[in-house]
Image (cartoon, rainbow, N blue to C red):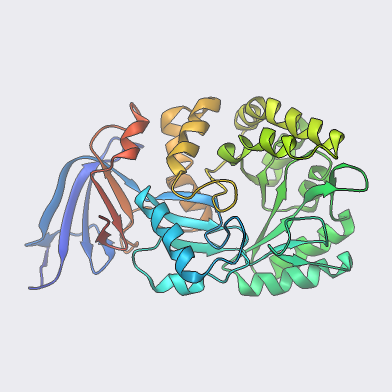
Length: 364
């Protein structure tokens, strides 16, 4: 047993791991976890359930309607996510460099993908990098891999006004080169995809993840499982599809497609889960979706067949392991939630944690 050092904030937490039913004893020392008892530590919680900090695997703290987000605005968005229990964010594209937030112990930890990579007039204006020459994709992937924290984000499909519907942005050859470039930099690569047409080439090229994925079919799901390609379905963002369609009267084919994707989304995601696709919770906060809604996403995943336990797992332990982050082991950052009730029985307990510990500090 280690002796406590006077005048240091050393706390002890005891609770139940809802995924194993085992008792957890954690000591928090200087913002990190030790499993070794520390004599003289104050017991801050004795009872309840303890889970690793929630993960929002698709979030944009550097984006808001109207753009022009400052680092202080991004900090406020990040704090809203922390208050909801999100202590790790995979930021999949931002026009703002949010690295200055890394020094703020009241913010979540971040894993970033740099800026979106798109083509002119084929994505939201000023959100990312627009490549005039799509054959420059691999070179831009290399640049964004070096600017991020291990990920690169492509826009795989978006409305093509000439055809009036969702359409792929890249050829298979361009995607093959892009994936190779990302992997050569030690980065993983993901793609925004709403529709169906862009998915076969992206999956065949070997991207590491699909964002949204409402156009998936059973054969593509099987291919994702075979290639270990993950899916972040952003269910609460999909709820905005009808509104997006309503605002696109000039493009009736696109309108119909977006409405069909929305109508089929629940069945698509349930089938993806049944097929064994690795799926992780992500809110897509930053555009149409407000920050601090990770529990809404967990509820939505539970409703498409995950159930409470597996939905919670897909927003905590599973994405942390996928992203190489800590899961309450010796030496991990002290990022966790203490819950009064068993979340496997009642997910609403996530909305009223008895304690949120972020970088070893209690969030008030």
